[in-house]
Length: 404
Ligand SMILES: C[S@@+](CC[C@H](N)C(=O)[O-])C[C@H]1O[C@@H](n2cnc3c(N)ncnc32)[C@H](O)[C@@H]1O
Image (cartoon, rainbow, N blue to C red; front, side, top):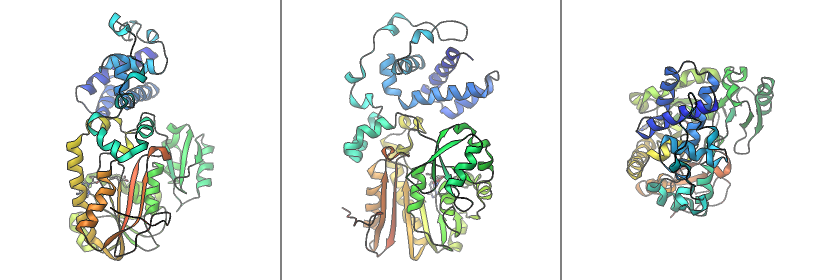
């Protein structure tokens, strides 16, 4: 496909997305309906669509319309490309620009801050309040594509040996400071899943901040561990990469754990899946981690669709679910054990305020460790806390914590 044809495909997909369809379904359907397009074309179209979604508001302003054409025009203008090289009207290319579309766009510096930095209007107040002085730089960081991170499976290899194995297959990486297991892919990320290192369980795809969250959880050999909101098991496997313990995974939607047995097999770890009925028989645990459902605002670079489809009503519903999960998980923690709480959110109501509300409902629990990460730290935005019954509070680095 020519670059123009790829942009034309992105315009169609974006129009359908604006009409309400989910982006992943649109991309899959487009691929099925256009079999002539090769893997490189599909990847390029996906990249175009995702880049637009990360910057929807500013691109709509630059392109003069919140439509597929307007957004792609805004994308080209933002990149300093000449739109006439794409909007040629030739076969499979978008129609030439109209006079109205040719009108000079407003400079980005003249746009309201929330539009210029692509912050959704509905959640802007809570994001501003939660991020303080970091609001603008974090929102700017969320406009850019996220790096690809790997977690070296330290039960099978070292980080250096995993990097060397990947390099033999052309995948270049460098260590990332957020976790002792984290590697940032610097070249040929698309080859990772076909690599031998991946097939043999030496590495897993996992954001570096997500790894840092797992690192914060207290864990000793032989511990009984429950990942209460396990989903695909990213956190379970990151914990299992640290020590030989007894790992259990649960999820209110058990079908979300369907890939976990295969991933655990590849990593060489054993994970027992527990349904709702199995929890009571398996407790108590030394660590119960609640990686709760959240707005995902810390991961909007990877899931930019959510940025425009999550609002205050979702936030209210999610904070209720988060509180319920903590209340249900806390009794599963045995004496001397820990309750872990994690979100990939940047919003205080889902993070420190959620933990503070739990402490208010459950006298005797304290915060033993806490960490807040934003994309300015390199990975996704995450919040994590470790709660214990009746212990003095210390921050992850050892400094005392105060809670209002
Ligand atoms: C953020 S995702 C988990 C991601 C996963 N821990 C990982 O690292 O790959 C949150 C998960 O919580 C599950 N969930 C939602 N409500 C729940 C509940 N009441 N109890 C347990 N799990 C729940 C969802 O099905 C979803 O899989």
